[in-house]
Length: 260
Ligand SMILES: NC(=O)c1ccc[n+]([C@@H]2O[C@H](COP(=O)([O-])OP(=O)(O)OC[C@H]3O[C@@H](n4cnc5c(N)ncnc54)[C@H](O)[C@@H]3O)[C@@H](O)[C@H]2O)c1
Image (cartoon, rainbow, N blue to C red):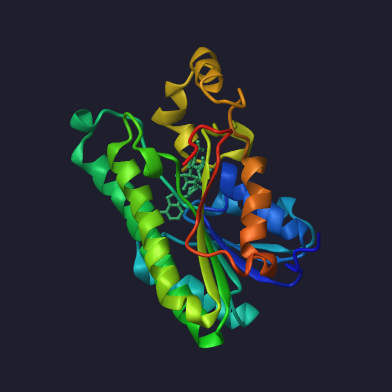
């Protein structure tokens, strides 16, 4: 099936590492022009170098800072003339019991996972309204659908992304703009494809040894953990014209972990 993404301009926040990297390279493989908007510029440039002939560009962006995001949006509009697709993938968390979490971790989760979505979605959707077309696909989490142990605030931010997606989808559907959410399963990063800012490089990565990963995999109906590649086809589909009658939806791509 031709998704018709050739020549589309796609912005991927958090596109430098693990899941975002796979999504960025997936769009590049369809012939799209991709701008990775990531705080980890060195890792974003590495992904750009992996992609075929100049199809991926790195633009240093902090999603928690509206000025930084707006400068990136201006950069993309100035250089590419428009934004067809926004993928909100930047994320941050540390697994910890709610009562044990220091204040700065709670604030960082809200800043990256909640404000990051708002800061990017607002200017891009405003641009899409002016063009009467566009696609937004946001990467949330099953934590935001069912609530996850040791992920209370993260669960809240991802539930917020799901609810905001539905609300905005109702407001801008009349312009032909769609917004949908994809929730990956547990998808540990690998050192060679995860940036310095990746959650898998810090405390979070160190938490999960092989034995714990195997136990988590056994709790999934499909009996394996997620791979970054698993979410690529669903994201590409939702970003394409083929999905023009799907909006406000949440799709779990998580081996059956949740079925709601
Ligand atoms: N990996 C999983 O198990 C899993 C499961 C469910 C949902 N998710 C969601 O998928 C998305 C990607 O997860 P991942 O495992 O690839 O994470 P990751 O930590 O490997 O990558 C996240 C990317 O976001 C970037 N980033 C962090 N803070 C930023 C900021 N302030 N501004 C711009 N960029 C910033 C990082 O540099 C990194 O490149 C996240 O939204 C995450 O919540 C992941």
